[in-house]
Image 1 (cartoon, one colour):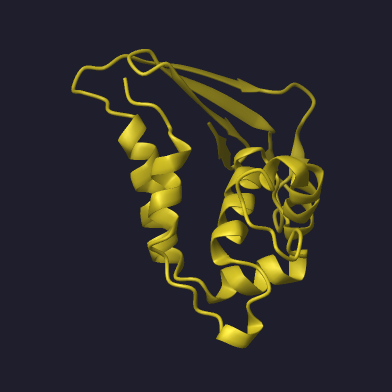
Image 2: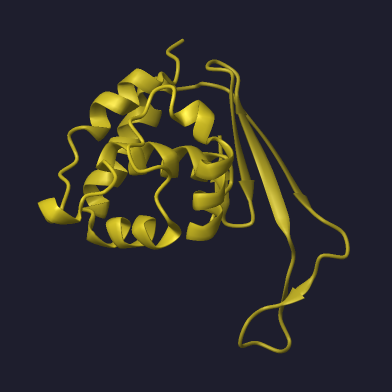
Length: 156
């Protein structure tokens, strides 16, 4: 079984081009990407939560990142991601995950799903329809990986 090794991700992240002008770089692109990916894997969603995650883990991040100017602000994170080649970033991330998860034909995947009771909410724009808060777990027995989907978000 392959493992999700940070070194593999880190090597791939260095291949992403930094679209910012040289004089506007107060934080390295590598630092921004590592903090953001770590935060999103831990379920941070808006830019403010990603910044808060980075600040909460700053001591740990500074053990392997430069962080010359501290943790980037949520505005910096947002601006950088607007400029990034999102297709390339997706390729890097998918390749990283795929390198660890190798399912052969006939591999066993256990799936479990739930709708939480009392969680019905009106669907935006539709008065009559309701949606439920749902989650599902998929366990890949051959690679010992659990993929959890909560609402529309996937968590490893």
